[in-house]
Length: 448
Ligand SMILES: [Zn+2]
Image 1 (spheres, protein in one colour):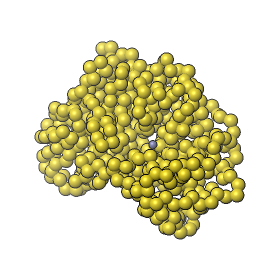
Image 2 (cartoon, protein in one colour; image 1 turned 180 degrees about the vertical axis):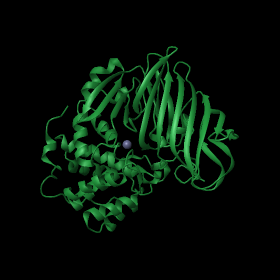
Image 3 (cartoon, rainbow, N blue to C red; image 1 turned 45 degrees about the horizontal axis):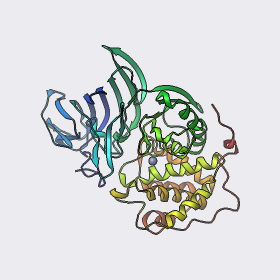
Image 4 (tube, rainbow, N blue to C red; image 1 turned 30 degrees about the vertical axis):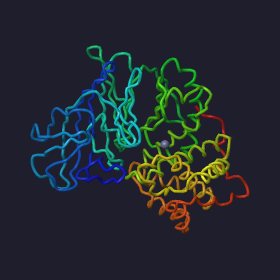
């Protein structure tokens, strides 16, 4: 039985994964993927079988502790016979050989997962696309570490996590990466394209941009604010949670940009050289704190990812000297008030979990909280949220409790109206002056 009501066919609560070691050979021209996945974890309930999520690729062999073990495969599950009863707490290690022509899964949220580009590939998994490229326990709360060894054709560049090494054999290059920060399956990624790369100092955090050479000028122009964004968010939310940040810009247009662990992915259409979609660059960067570091344990709490990332856009607008967060909030409140009032932020349901109203109402809740408790307490709440739950998962209840505790006041009625009722609450009145930045030093010129 799946532990997540929003994705009832995903995951298996009988075990947890601690590490994925993925060796993948990918041929771009023919879209052929051959993989060996070593999955290490721990059994949570006594069982003789477990099921990994795998969709559209065929397993050919599974090795357990004692050699080859039995398995059956359906269109979405790899059911594995462990050979004996495992007790709660027992470690396990499985090695799955698999392959095929990877393609995105068709889901109620659109097509998700491994996707061929015109000349390369991307992974866009949220929420259930990961099984399109590796066998996994596809639950947002089951975070693990990763090692990726991706072998592909000459002429391509690969991004997946922190680079370890590259080596070439028989004309094909193997790119090795490691991700030690706890990462859910939907944020694991591989990006392959004919890219050039450029390093960037992001306010002390090593950055890298991968993009088609032809888009160099547009990329340079639109990513120019990234160092200052990093400085602003580090001040507002606490230290950047990973060793580095990468941006990948594809040659293809993409429907939406997306966040992966340590990587923001944008289509050529999002990087027009005029900064038209600067808010989205801020949004994806903010997910590294909200969603990727502090994760959701169940999709029901998705506003904790999207409401926070959306509010980060408004913080960036304010700190970069454009519209204040309050002006943004007033505009979005009016727009949302004109929309149907039939959504419960704390439980929007699977069909509405990525509805724009979840994003905007979540951001408005945070602004209303800021107006209610004041800037000082509000930013202490955000920083304490990341400090306490970074690298792990948290729930809406955790946020309600933490906010009340940091602010030192009762907030049940406030949260009840914003989170559990459908009607859009009014925004509290603004303070007499514009909300002040956390420190004046943030309104300075870009660093780096
Ligand atoms: Zn988002």
